[in-house]
Amino acid sequence: MGGRPDRRTYYAYRGFALLSSLVPRPVASALGALLGRVWYHASSDQRRLVRGNLARVAAPIGSRDLDRLVERAYASYGRYWAEASRLSPRDAERRRARVTYEGREHFDAVRGIRGVILALPHVGIWDAGGLWGLQDHFRIWTVAEQTADPELFAWFSARRRRLGLEVLPPGPETATTLLHSLREGGAVALLADRDVLGDGIEVPFFGAPAKVPAGPAVLALRAGAVLLPTAVYQRAPGHVHIVVRPPVDTARRAGLREDVHRVSAALLVELAVLIRREPAQWHVFQPVWASDKDRPGETA
Image (cartoon, rainbow, N blue to C red; front, side, top):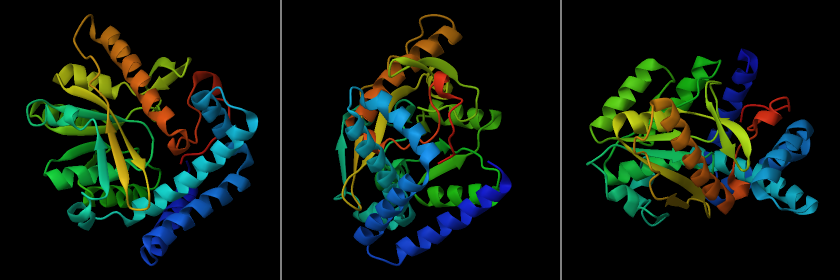
């Protein structure tokens, strides 16, 4: 993205965050869904891209059902921004009644004993996972995509730090920091279903080759960390459901390159399971598969 689109995005996000904070949470959630549906009707090129993405994820599906699913995805993404803009550390104190868990025992069994990588798809409201760390007094490191506008990146990072997420930019120093944290028994959360930097590896994803980040597999193999596929789903306004799948097998079997490919492929199988549970909450509005890279799309 260029500097000017990022600047507009920055002011739009901040304005929506302010508006959401001034109305009751259910109203903010409904407003977010409404704005998402407006975007759905206004963005014909991108809507076709999202339709193609969800056609793979939800197959087999009829044309009308697919159109409805795409509209729900836009509404869900609008809800995501409404909910994310209202999250605060205060929620950690009263969040226990609003957060439900499935498979949490996979994390609890190794917490503090081995490093843990929570590998997430772009599903639901992943930022809210930081409140889990605040509640249970552990630190979560994560990596955020850089933006062309430093002020926008700083604003996103500051908001996520308030939720207990230690946000780092991509780069060699960040990899060193994450490895150190994992070897000390720390927790790292990484979005793992889309290659943002363009240096990912190609593995099967919903039956077709797609480029995905190699970072989760590389860190798990080098640090001896547990790799847990995880998703944070939106429920009613202010409520989330965190699902933790069983650990991916990260035992060393060959050279690092071969093991990274094998582990990444196994991880994507698990992320597909999580995405299929709530395909309307898969907020990916960019090309994902190698055959789709010439399709239009914007950063979301």
